[in-house]
Image 1 (cartoon, one colour):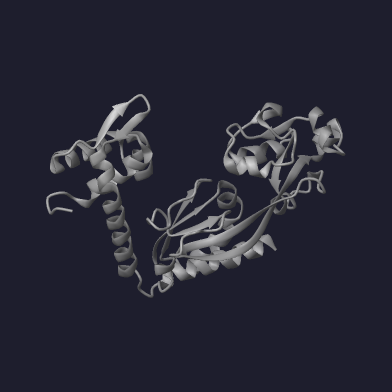
Image 2 (cartoon, helix red, strand yellow):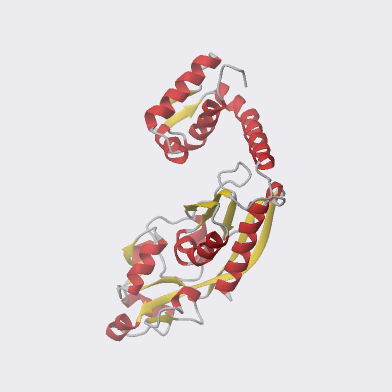
Length: 294
C-alpha cells in the first residue's frame, strides 16, 4: 500500500471483488453506490490499472485485480489482527459485532444480551442477522452463532448442542384439516416452505418426499415469516422444537418421521481470547445458548 492511496479504497475494492457489483459492495460496507464507484475510480487512477470491466453478468475483475487480491487479503487479515491487539484491553466495553440466523437472533439472543448489557453498560452490541456465514477471519463480525462447524484453525469454537427442527401446525388448522399420520398424508395439506432451495435445504429435506417447492402453498425464504404463518394457522411448516414448546397452540406433526438436528456452535477468532470484552460476550453466549437449548 502506497502512502498516497488510503486503505479504505483497497477495502472497498475487496468488497466489490467479492460482490461482483457496486450495489452489493455498498450494502456490505454501509456506503452509497456512488461512493463505492468513486472509491474504485480513485484506486484505478492511483494504481494506473483497470480493475473491473462491465458485462451483463455484472462487474468482471481484470487479471490485474485478481493478482492484487491475495496480497490485499493478507493485508486485511493483518490489519484486523492489529486492531484486535489494540483493543485487547481488560475493560468490558466497546463494540461487539455478533452474527446469527434470523430465528436465533430474534427468538433466543435478546434474552441473553439484555442482562449482559445491563451488567456491562459500556458494551455496544451489533447484531448481524442472516443465514449467510459471516467471515470471522476477515473480521466481518467478532463472534458468530453458527449451525455448521467452523473449519478454520484460527477460530476458537464451542459446541453448544443440537437445535431440533420438526414439522408443526396450529391446533386450529389441524382441527379443520385433520392430523397427518404418514408422510403421504401431507399431500392434502397446506405446506409452508422455501422459495429458493439451497444446499443446506436439499440436505435437510432428504427423505421428506413431498417437501419440495412445487408442493408448497406458501413459499418464503424468511424462516421468521414461515414460523409466523404456522402460528397463524396457515398450514404445516418447519419450526424449532424448543421454540414451539413455548406456544401451547402448536402441535408437532409426524414427530417420529421428521426430526432434524442442527448442531450449533459459538465461534470467534482465537486472537480475541485474551480480550476481556470478547471473552465475556463469548462466554455469555455459550452459557445462554446452552440454557436455551436445555
